[in-house]
Image 1: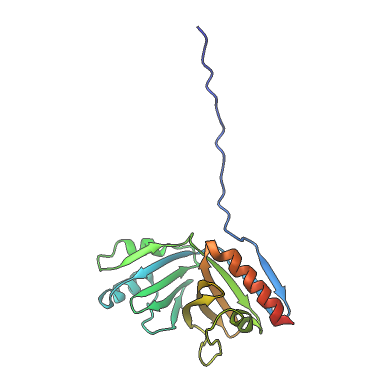
Image 2: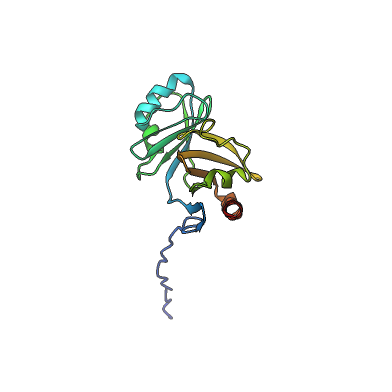
Length: 191
């Protein structure tokens, strides 16, 4: 009777690498960089639920168009009358913070769907405006302003983080297009 020999296959460790990880570009007046991964949720809720959600998330959900709030590494961006994008860069999970609440809301984890790109420097606004119709003057789009808009052919969420700095959020499937678009625009802005 022949003995069957079991093939033992060593387990393979698989490491998830963020899309565009490590991509950077620096030209005169602007620097582009893919930001580290973050936890994100798409949050929808009626007015009656906002106070409880704000308390659970540890950041007040903004109630006015084109605004954001931030506290302890967590940022909430107003996207619509009952819609927010919540980004946590402190390593905490905003989805878990909403899980125990009984107030009416919808919280969907979108951490792996989005990619963030920073656009920093005196030519940052000009770089973004190469493909975005949003008025990025400081009067119209001050520090903390947030908006769902377009860049070229794709939807982005734009946040002004400082006078000359922006965070561009896009879907990972469009991230190569967005980074390339911004790279070309940065070169033009530098010229």
